Length: 369
Image 1 (spheres, rainbow, N blue to C red):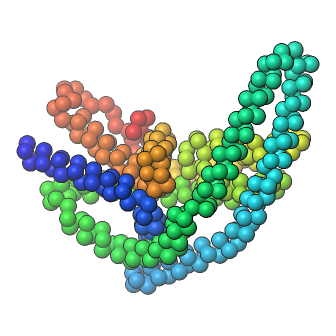
Image 2: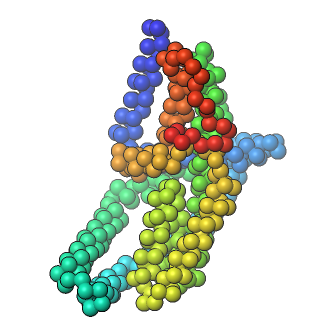
Image 3: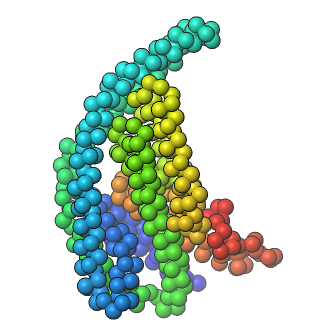
C-alpha cells in the first residue's frame, strides 16, 4: 500500500511540475511545440521511406526539404493575396457599417409602419445594436494593432522561422530512438500497461489531429474557392478562416456560418447573393459531415466533441496560444487515463458485486468519455 501511494505521489508531483514549467516557460516554448507537432505529423512519411531501406537521416532530410518547399511556395502564393484582401476588408468595414446602419434604420421605419411596433422600442433595439457593433469594431481594431506591433509577436515569428525547422529535423530524425529511450525508463512492473495506454493515446491523436487537420485544409480550399466564385469580397481569407474554425466541433460550423453570411449581408444589397453565399457554406458543411469526417476522422477518435471544446477553451484561457496547441494532446492523454481508471474501478471491489455496465464497442463513441 505504501509503494502504491509513493508511485501515485510521484506521478502527481511530476504532472504538477510539468504544468508549472508550461506556465512559466509558455512564451518561449512555441517553436519547440510546433517542431514536435510537425515531427509527429511527418513521422509516418519517414517510416514509409525506411520501409524501402532508406536511411532515417536521409529520409528525414527528404521529408523536411519537401515539406519546407511546399510551405514556402504556399506562403509566396497566398501571403500577397491575404494581405491585399485583409487590408481591403479593413478599409471597407466603416463603409459597410454605415450601410448596415442605414438598412437598420429603413427596417425600423418598416416595422413602425407595417407591424405597428412602438417607435421607442424599435429605436432602443437599433441603438443597442449600433453600440454593440461599434464596441466590437473598436475592440477588433485595437487588438489587431497591438498584436501586430508588439515586439513579442516579432520575436515569436522569427523563432518559428529559425528554431522550428531545426527542432523538427532533430525530433523527426531521432523519433524512434527517443521513444525507445523513454520506454527504457518506464517502471518494469507497469511498462506493458503504460505502453498499451500510450498506444491508445497515439491512436486517438492520429485519428483526431491528423484526420481533422486534413479536413480543415480541404474545407479551407472548398470555402475559399466557393466564396470567391460567389462574389464575396475577401472570400479567400474568409474561406481559410472558416476552414480553420472547423477544427472546433460545432463551434467552428456555427462561427463560419455567422461570419460568411454576415459579411455577405454587409456587402450585397440583394438576398439572392446572400443566399448564394449561404449555399456555398451549406455545400461545404454537407461535404464535411457526409464525406470528409467519416473518411478521414471516423468514429475511432474517442474524443467527445464536448470535451474537445472544453479542452480548447480551457487551454486557451490558462496558457494562451500554447494552450490551444497542447489542448488536444492533453485531452487525449487525460481521456485515456480516465477510461483506464474507470475500467479498473468497475473491475475492482469499490464498484461492488454485479456485472459492470457494457463497455462501448470498437468504433462506438462513449456518450460521456
